[in-house]
Length: 431
Image (tube, rainbow, N blue to C red):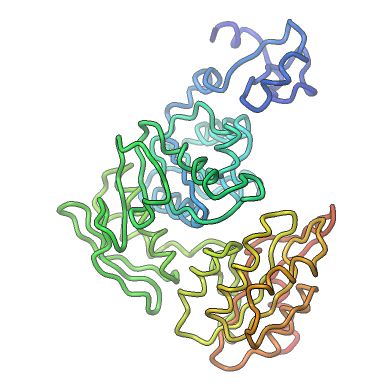
């Protein structure tokens, strides 16, 4: 079969039946199989597994990170640690595609089609990468956009409420996530949230902060960054990071554990490289020190809880909304979480899409009944400006939901918009 494919000069490979022509090799996938009958008989087809073998991609070790929250940061941490330890590594996720220090592609889907992923792996291989770290979304698992990929390690961050507009119920969402960990692949699981997932115990490792685990945090502090001590059998090592929050302690623990499993490097060498990781754009990103303004992607009740809980000893102001045409049930829960921690709350638009922004805001406000210090402003820029103008000395402003997104989805349009730029513009003008 290899001879057949290599005997012709294919101009391109496609997975779209409408793009096929006589000079094109057609990749038959789980997503396009129902359209395969529309192709003429002379079309030469290939499966992802066959293409993987022909391109000799098995020289790269693939690492998949899946969970509701923490995928992007954990993937970036693993990518950073491996590169800093001397293992050329590629990264694919919401922030784009990178090989070592080179950006190959800008932001896209969390997990693109299997053809795009295979092309990215091939580019990484041709550039000398030894590892390919990728975020794996629940949509990709449900649609089998990761078919035939042999994972050297699968990492579980956590599972909380999200994407119920697509999956229907939390039970179905958990079932889909669990399917990723059902085979014999090596897997690393969050022991503190192990009850939320079903998995194949073969080749399973665990990490934990509270519960006994293969990789266990023995002690930690969240003051002025994150410091801790991690133990793996007879190895015990201290680490430090400038990142913030308990949720990032979990991301760090997962990353150190994953790199240890993949490379068997001493924990001392892995932990030493952690200090050089500067964080992920749009994830607990400090936009201003004085006043303290932080932007984060948190857009679920659990995500907002983790961010606000990490700063619960401070006086907090928070700006956030919720996406339109998505799970409505989480909106009051998001409001309730904000009400538990924040002194000032500004409810505004996120990406309203086809929904009326006021309707989305009203859903969030249901979780804030009786709470003082709540304001509703549809215009997100105006909401941020108001929050900044009312910020007092010692208070921290958190702007949640969009992170490093550079647009707002209103109707069927993507309008340029960046929370961070709004903050910088306002503070610059004020100075």
